[in-house]
Image 1 (cartoon, helix red, strand yellow):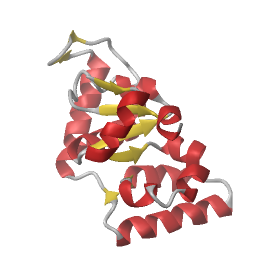
Image 2 (tube, one colour):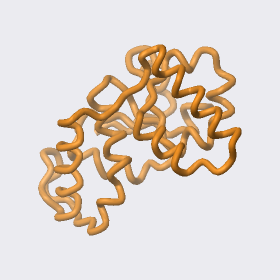
Image 3 (cartoon, one colour):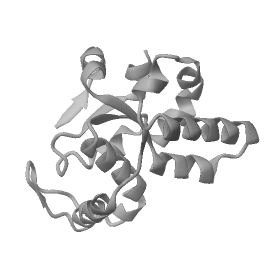
Length: 162
């Protein structure tokens, strides 16, 4: 289990890449936009771009996210879940729905509405499979995946940007 605190962020940033959850991008988009250092180091998830595009209300935010998408494509920073990522994510959601055993914690509590976690699970799986750590403001959802993804690393967005 890896819930990373502020003191580990610098060490991790040298060995892994940040992959931002949608809520972290929305809340910290100004800091991301203004950082010349961060954009080449980060990885962007196609799942996050889906969520940003589907939920963005104003045109200027949409245009910003579209510019980021173009940069990510050109610089090969865009991560898209592959076929087996979808399948492993489906198995994870099933385990959460039915409270099945995890390798590290045994039986987990049932989460009947776990299907709502599909996109977060895809983001977590993509980070886990691509040498990235998840930066999020929504820690609770990602903590649910830790029993099933032992090496998943999660960083509080507030800690990452402080």
